[in-house]
Structure formats: structure tokens, C-alpha cells
Image (cartoon, rainbow, N blue to C red; front, top):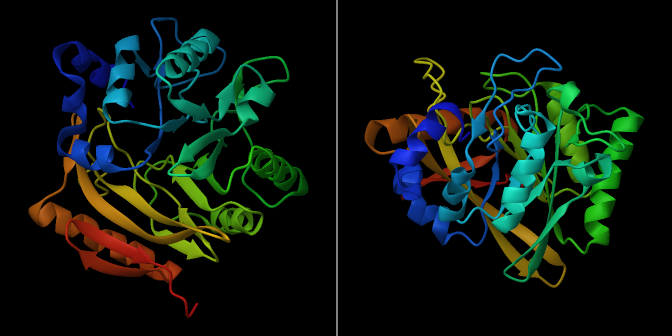
Length: 323
């Protein structure tokens, strides 16, 4: 979230500042995916068609922050993409396109909001699709801009929409599919059962990675069949107040190791590197803070049967093949 207080720091800081000590690790990745939870626009008129407590906007210079960390692709399917009206969303899309940063989950109409982003990453075609159950007033129409809004349940209409997203990605030659979901309430450490049901069904239907976000807290990671489910990846850069118990300033960089085989890409493991957020800056966690973050993740992963092993700089996560 690059708006509000973060946006106020942009004229005073170099783009590298906001990523702190995480920057070398992000730059070492073959691709970086994130949820962009603000509009990037000079337009200052906030959304007024429905009640909103918070409206997040960053000036166009914020695009340099994303470029600095070599962000490859962002989700725009969330409850802040239209915080500064349709123009704010269209401006955001324009600046991302000019910066060659792929995006999905919002568009000039419903078809655009549902269109996957396709990236070639080390010879693997990755399809990135995004959806949200937040802010129904932001939903794209057949001829109006907005987000890819949907429910996350097992009703036929929902699953038909999901199948359409997956089929589109496969038609565009995607070999590995990431489904980015902005879902559920804030400040919750455990996903509801209905989200678990939906995520597993999505993998049954052909998704490889679930990229969840919205709770402002990281949640446990589940390996299911050949896929991995990040129910919530927590926050990264923002200006939010810290909850002293829930610690929304604790999070991770989740690094997915993928191997290309003759049968298609295989997810080998996930390395979770703990980070700690400060006001408008994120750094690698160290010392007792890092231990506490890793300990919480290990506890949250237990109900999912994921195997967790301490490693230098973080935590390796593996599927439990006996499940």
C-alpha cells in the first residue's frame, strides 16, 4: 500500500528506501508478485458511490518503487483499486503498462478484469489471475471499469466463473497458474473453512498457487495435491498502526522453488523469509523478532500438515507426503 503516509515519504526518499534490507532478496528472484492496494494516480477526487472509511492513493512517482524491486506482476482485485474513482483505476493501469508491470483482477470492463496476465519466467509460462470478494460496488460491468468481483464458495455460478479464468489462462498457454485472492475480514489469523474448501477446489480445477491477502496478518500455508495455498501473505509496505498482540507488522517474503519437468512445472518447496514492517519501510526481520515470526508460522502451519524446517534466514515449507 503506497498511499497516504507512504505517499508523503516518496518525495523525501529514494525508491530503494521503502524496501529496506529486503531489496537484494527481491531482486534475486526470477519474478515477484504482489497485491497493489492503492490507486496510482494524480486524480484526487475520492470514491463517493458507496461509503468508504479509507481511500488510498499514491502519486505517479510511486511506480518507481515497484520498478526498483523488479515487481513483475500485481493484483488489482481488491477494495482500494477504485478509491479514486474509475479514473484512478485507469490511471493505475496506464502507469503499470508504461512500466511494463503485468497486472490482473481489474480492467476497463468485466472481460478485462477477468483476463489473465501471462509471464514467461525462465522458460515457464505463468498465468496470473485475480479476484476479490471485497467492495461489490467496485465490480466491473460488461462495459464499465472495475474489479473481478466474485464470491468464494462452491456454488455452480462461482465455480463456472473460476473455470473460465483457468481455461483462459490455459488457452494462453499457461503451464503454471497463480490465483490471487483478496478475501475475507481483517486481522484474522486462521482462514474460515469455506475458504479452505474453495482453495482446494481451485487446485482440483487446475490452479497451482493460491496467493491470498486481505487479513493484514499472515496465515498458515497448506500443500494440497501438487499445489500450494497461501491463505494470507500478510502486509508488506504500508503506514498502518501496529497491533501489539496480533502484530500486523510481521510478515514474510514467500519464495517458491519451481522445477521444470517434461510433465510440466513442479513446486518443490517454499522458503518463507521473515520480515518486519516499519512506517513506510520493510526490512528482513532479525534476532528475537525473526524467531517469534517463524514460531508463529510453524504453529499456524500445523493444522494443515505442512512440514516446516528451520533454515538460514527463515523457514523451509514442504508438503507432508503421508497426508
